[in-house]
Image 1 (cartoon, rainbow, N blue to C red):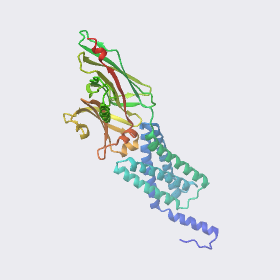
Image 2 (cartoon, rainbow, N blue to C red):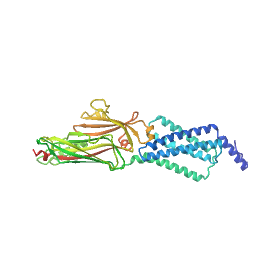
Image 3 (cartoon, rainbow, N blue to C red):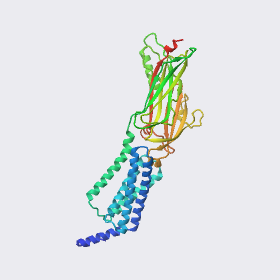
Image 4 (cartoon, one colour):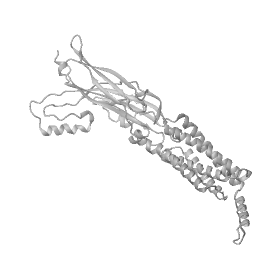
Amino acid sequence: MRIPANASNNSRQRAQRMLARNRRSPVCLVSILLVLLLTTVVLGYFGVLDVGSALNFPGRVTGAALIVAAIITFLGAVGALDHWVWHSFPYSGPVALFGAFVALLSNVLLLVGILKDGDSKFYLAVFCALTVGSAGAVFAVWRTSVVIPAPKRVAAALIVTSVIAVGNFGYQNLYMPSQREAEPVIKLATGAPVTSRDHKAFSVPIDITMENHSDVAFYILGDIFHAMAQRVPLSPKDRLRQQWRTDSEQWKDFEGANPLSRREIHQPGELVEAQPWMPYARWIDPGDTFSARVVLQLPMGTPYDEVTFYASASLARKDRMAVEDLNFKGYSWQGSAHVPSWVSGNKEWDALVFRGKIDENNAIDEHTRDRRTLSVYWRFGTHGADILEAITSPHGPDASSTETQTRYGIRDVETGPVERTLWDIKSRR
């Protein structure tokens, strides 16, 4: 239907209303209602879950925003029904248009998040369909010649809504993973040595303390204390410069990083003791402190000249992920724990294997990402001891070290070396 150029204003207005009515087909209305109501259900579902179970404050804010968006899209569906059928509210057209716009913005942001981090093909298809459908709903409502009261205010509301939504999305997905808050601190101190009654052995007490001065809680994935002993004979004369260079070449390996010295001849250290010093799979809350004392015992005739102590812990931030059922699974030398080659490939090392499932920090990632598995390897050998972590997915590559630290908040906290010479003790014989 075309409007004649010479038609009067009244005729033109009647013709425009006729065109608008012709565009309001039942099929178009059903499509809009279907898209908006499905979007309402999806946004409301994720929003309620996030408000109740997200691990950090931005996640709960996202949940509240999704609930508000779900309410707006539902009102948009009601507005579209009134705009097509009932005609009881004069501004039902703008309400339907605003609801469709919010649905489009929400679906686009969720689709971007799934494309960036998601694994689920189902939810990818769902949000692709909802994004296309909500874009079509915006266009379908717009072409019914919706009369927008105070268009500048409506435009400002749309801009503010978009800025808030994009800002929250950026804060949750870009800013939060890049934060580096203070980490727990491990302190290690040696006490006065004690000799046995027969003076054939001695013991050195070691006090270890973890202090969490940060504002978040940490989940203890594993911890280890180990002592390295070595012989340090003294050269009767200054050592050659080439010998210094040979010593410095060992610094590529942490356990071989001995100081350059004119007279001390540091021989390779040997592991004399390794043990956990904290219970794993427990929380250390903000402001909390955990202390432990371990005792190293050696015979008085030990050939070593000094002992070096280390303490470390593998931690996960409570606001980045939750670990479910982290349990001991087996030993690397028995073959039952399915240890990867990068752990079992070096025959000089053995490992205790712990595994658990990871829960993501928000409902959207929890549903759109494959369930990750956390593996913690308590590794030890003659050249030292350490803790290794790995996050694996069933159908994708393992998490990189950057993703492990930024997305899941895993931290390795260490202290040492703390050295203790043994000459004063051995001279008591």
